[in-house]
Image (cartoon, rainbow, N blue to C red; front, top):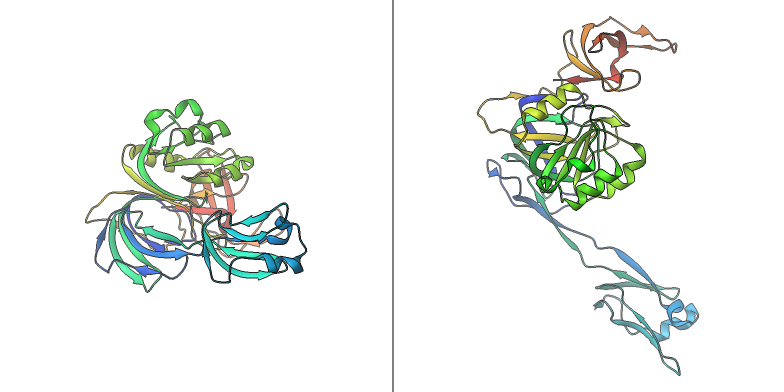
Length: 350
């Protein structure tokens, strides 16, 4: 599924890796059918650490603080438990801010580790387990519509797809998000604004798919607890016609979206899957190259987000205005313009 170009395919077979962030236990086997909410692997995550400044809270020097400590290294304590106490006319107490275990002491400070957090990894998509990785995760094969995104907020969601706008150039506004949006994955157009985000939180949507996103909203969107997938890029960018038409044709179906991504070249990218169980499907060929007739989309200005068709594949490297010589393709874009574009500025639409 980790591919060098964008996939927009109305019916294909894909294999989705589901990995734990650390070693754990895989609880399904090869050949087993799974549902989106089903747990396929589980582990525990280390709890947060808190540094408790005993000396400061008791009003003593770090050297003297040790004599007032009431707990031992390795001891488990509950929130509000007394960790250290100083007697006298004005009794001073230092209490635990959370449940945890004392793991260290030094320079008048205690180190408190919170309990481990259980993590259950869901399948996210319906499908069949085709491979497992000992203690780390599984590979799920599923069939349906598949779209790769450009940016995601690191969350995952599963719900019913709901078109919130009529065309790919419309922005997603708060007035379009009402009580009927609860539990759904909303599809916007060119962008969304802060008011729309607040309304989505209040209406408890499961996720949002949108063409572009204003850069100033990135921190806020990264903080929401539902998945957001951007299909075109950062900025006010209309969703590509191919993507919008495909999503509109799937309105009302269940959909899985993943905003997980890796920054390194060739890393995991956000994706959208509309499951459509079938015995047939066209498996993705990871090495499928750009050829004459391929549908492509520009990734950088002045063709960012514009789709087109490859007319020619000049041999060797072509000279650009910048003076660089790079391999690429001659593309006829949907706005009727024709231009030579380097391969690294193009994404293939399957």
